[in-house]
Image 1 (spheres, helix red, strand yellow):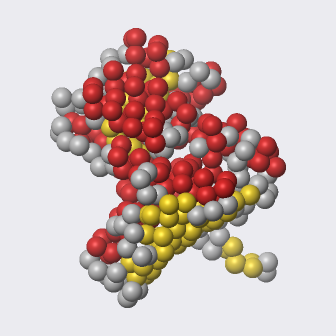
Image 2 (image 1 turned 180 degrees about the vertical axis):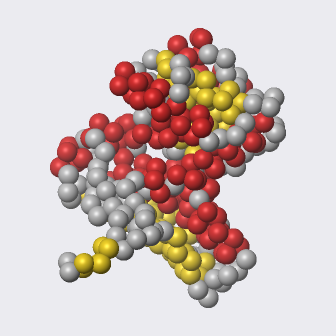
Length: 337
């Protein structure tokens, strides 16, 4: 096999980013199909990705299309069913994070791909961002000494629709928006998180609270080796997409993140101003291509790609424990999860 025939399941916000990248930027891949039940999205997907068939359901797709692999970018609540269907069809799977909404569903997803003998990679996009990769190298080369504290901000400019914020659909703020940072905390610190404590509230958008979610939260955590961590997650950083990570070591620190998109300051009587990064797709545009390229390259070479189902399960366990802590108002141990 010298070329991977790929379909994207669910061309919503991130799914359309993946479809465009598969169509135009990822080497060794051919986008041959997409799915969405929304006619306007189908029209937009064809406009941006070319004359590629769009099916209304995954069942229609699997009945007709000839495929080697899929990108699962549907709502998290549908991940398990989609993974099972695609694994049964013998397709390799790239799945957006989080893998599922429960550890039991993660286990079921992992078992389904193992039983089918296909490969699963989970979309931990920040692991493929140049800033985080360089930070990892600096830490591994002892550039800051032993890492002792992880600090992060994960801020989106505006809340998603309440229908998405509903924890039964997306997992809620911590599992959905804080997931990448909780994964990065374990990856950059090279240590397991063993205890979490979280507080949150619907402080800005009452509609988020009405579906059982919060729009701002703080998660504190302890690592097995004694290190400390803190994460501020927000749906309402109105000034821009504010995503920053810092690892403090015994001899220094590394900081990853920028608020500015264009390297331009505007100086007037009103003050000094610059633009901001609008969203995740803009901030991690190159990393989204890189992670799909890694997936395609590893499948074509018959190798196991990084970020396995087990990695995704471990990150979800932290997110679920933090959500439980927020709901119950107490620290939660991850022992046994």
